[in-house]
Length: 150
Image (cartoon, rainbow, N blue to C red):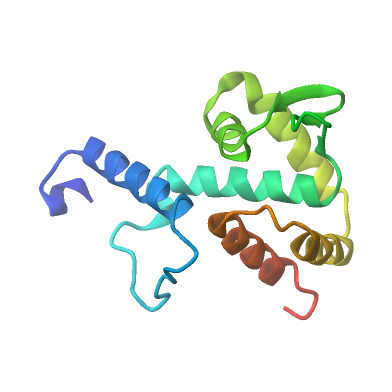
């Protein structure tokens, strides 16, 4: 891939990083056109891991595996993991100390039935007005993925 593009591979990761930052901070007024294909496929960038970690985080919150303490801290099994969902996602995807927690969350999510997950995601979508546009987009994707009619 890098030979055909004519520049080193580390440029791809930088481009992917900035694209992910842009998608997370996109304003609500700007609607991305879904018909424009992406130049860098998701499979080769770091954005894929971040997106999967973000989806796991949203699923865990929707299913009640992660609870929010009165001061805003998210907790899992009594352990505080942070306040900011974006920073928690980045830690889940990249930090070695969070890998066991990430694996535990994924295993717990797999124990739930798909219909139950879909129902909880719908409830979460209607009650969570604090989600940013990127999180809403991920939640819509999760609803499509867990839809029992698909």
